[in-house]
Image 1: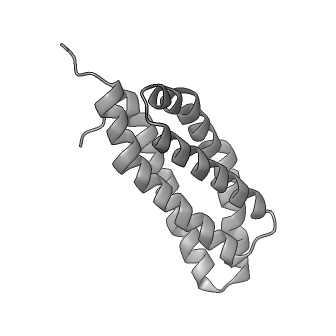
Image 2: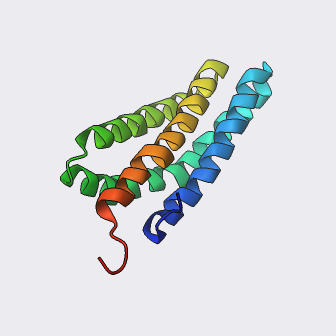
Image 3: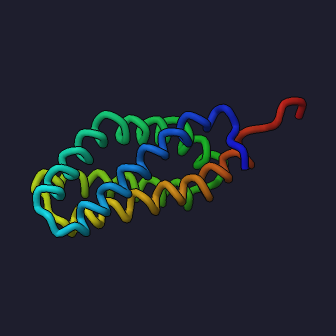
Length: 132
């Protein structure tokens, strides 16, 4: 489904998250401590500069509106995944391949969930086509 203009930027930002997840997964599977350390640093930096601001925009706008529209389950899942990702990235200060792999897997699954379920629901409930 084509994204409504109000969700397009958030959707575009998911591309960066998927790219990070892919690189983190490859580094974690490589068995190379230097690769794990490098990607853990990159993940931490990108989380602070890109993902956390993205999460905050979703939480302040989209999730509040979805919750008000009765979508508490989707809102709760999104918030729980955001918190889990925050905790995982904080653990990457001491890089290890298991944490990096868990972070990569959850980040990818989270983006897929938002694109397939959260954003679809938001478009259906919150965004009215012009003329309605």
